[in-house]
Image (tube, rainbow, N blue to C red):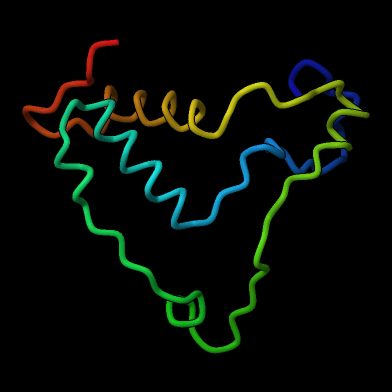
Length: 113
């Protein structure tokens, strides 16, 4: 969008990677695994994940869809953009930056590559 502002102007884009569809539980597990890898602390693998329904969390009247699959065809057509980075790698880069900049508890250091 930054490289093609005229193609993006006045448009909304669904951006994602069609190959990266995961459930919320799978996302939580992936983030937990990455936290352990990034920090070198296996204790993150034991961090509890609580499963609750959307209705219980948000309240009565909550509605949701079962699947969210990005349709990036509009971004491909208008911007010439295609996803190149996997969800796992995107999370790794984002979480590494967070741990390095903001969230590194005392004594935790990112694992060396």
